[in-house]
Image (tube, rainbow, N blue to C red):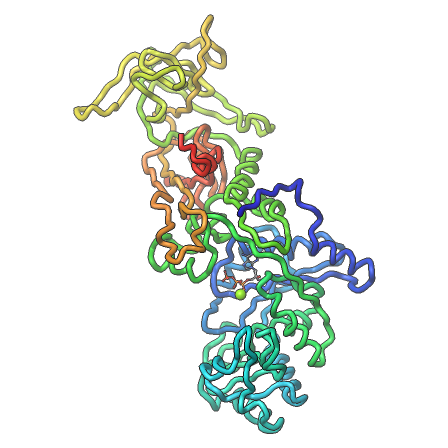
Amino acid sequence: MSDNSTKESTPNHFIRQIIEEDLSSGKVQSPFTRFPPEPNGYLHVGHAKSICLNFGLASEFQNARCNLRFDDTNPTKENIQFAESIAEDVKWLGFHWHQEPKYASDYFEAMYQFAVELIKAGKAYVDSLSAEQIRECRGTLTEPGQNSPFRDRSIEENLSLFERMKSGEFKDGEHLLRAKIDMASPNMNMRDPALYRIRHEHHIRTNNDWCIYPMYDFAHCISDALEGITHSLCTLEFADHRPLYNWILENITIEGRPQQIEFSRLNLQYTVTSKRKLSQMIDEGIVEGWDDPRMPTISGMRRRGYTPASIRDFCERIGITKKDNVIEMGVLENCVREDLDKNAERAMAVLRPLKVVIENYPDDKLEKLTAPKHPQQDMGSRDIYFSKEVYIDEADFRESANKKYKRLVLGKEVRLRNAYVIQCHDVIKDSDGRITELRCTYDAETLGKNPEGRKVKGVIHWVSAQKSQSATIRLYDRLFSQPDPADIKDFHEALNPESVEILTDCRVEEGLADVVAETRFQFEREGYFVADRHECRPGHLVFNRVVTLRDTWAKIEAGDVN
Ligand code: ATP
Ligand code: MG
């Protein structure tokens, strides 16, 4: 199943409608959302959907706000580098959080007090069963669970045990604080869920202050309420947690009444987004890191050359619904293709250079020509250089070819884009029969116009051999060659063995000599490219292919490989 929805077909989504209704009924005065990532990995394209939704809503409504709140309740997997990368990615996408970033750990003391309140009300108890025994007592979807033998501990005993849990008297897993709700509830989340567990771990913010940590379900609703969040937006798998979210807030003394609203998560073809699998790919060296340009992380997409606007546009196009679906990769790629088609400067780059000697051109002449930076947009012009020796791409020459081949053929003519018409007279080969050089002549009358009486149809790109820059160009493609890698038991089987091809002897036009990292171009006839954020610098040019000019995968998927 796939979804090809475009902007036109995206209606005012249901969450925006709820907020509008809440505003007009007076239930809410100033909408307040939050984006609550766990700092245990880098953000990925799925998170972008949630970011655009939460921060996007906050920027649409007057007086609306959105918090960035780190869900740092599990000290084992979290670190500061992840938190920093998350904040950077949100900013890069073009969003601003309200005040300073928040942390669930800011509220650890308050949460502890709320837990004590539940115990005092007889609504929480310390359980001393092992994790395995608790699992055995949980029941199944069709059978009720069984009460723990510790469920009826006195309030005093619970208070004392919980206090001792906090002060570090017990080992991990020895005790657990649970809500006392209903072991027979049809909703498993309501069968006396865990609220606090013992973890003797160093925490990124609270260091060793705590050795008990609140569970996500307990921490999340309290954080939302304390911050005054009005609309707590999350993905569908949390729908079953909503009764618990509300139960906790109803049973403690707290003011805020945020409403949890669920929407469907982003599933993208040819992509895995599980943090576990992403970090496995890094550990195994399948990719080079979290920001490898093939990764579906925000930082990977950034390095690949995606623009913030193209990612926001994508999130807009896919819309917000409650329906599970899988988005075609082509939708994402089209967003960046359209953005760059409109906004990226044009340049010429020869990926696999073949030397062309123009015999009737003066030996040491270097001619400055101009070319538009963009064919439609008013971006001005750029200087390009013509000389006796130029490079064209190997793929743009054949010794013989039929009429369909509109490039250079031995004995025939072709136009060098933005320059002259040349004709090929001779081919020079090495001892292995490889073509090493073409001998051509140029027609001086053909700059910007067709030769008298003849129409030259083919146009190819080129650069001057004397005045051009050497570059490394990395041709990235999809990391997976199967559309559903997330559903395959072993994702390795779905990897695309040709997800990158590195070309080290490319030539790009002289004007790119001092290109600024992250500048994007259309290399004419080749695709869209970006100057690599980390490696590209003057004297060491490195470009990444963002996306091809056309959707070549659409053809493959349609079974039309030609
Ligand atoms: P993963 O399962 O990839 O590890 P996660 O959901 O555990 O991701 P969090 O850091 O907890 O990661 O997610 C922060 C927020 O982003 C949550 O509100 C979550 O619902 C949302 N989110 C995560 N993945 C997606 C997705 N694929 N589509 C939409 N929202 C998502
Ligand atoms: Mg999570």
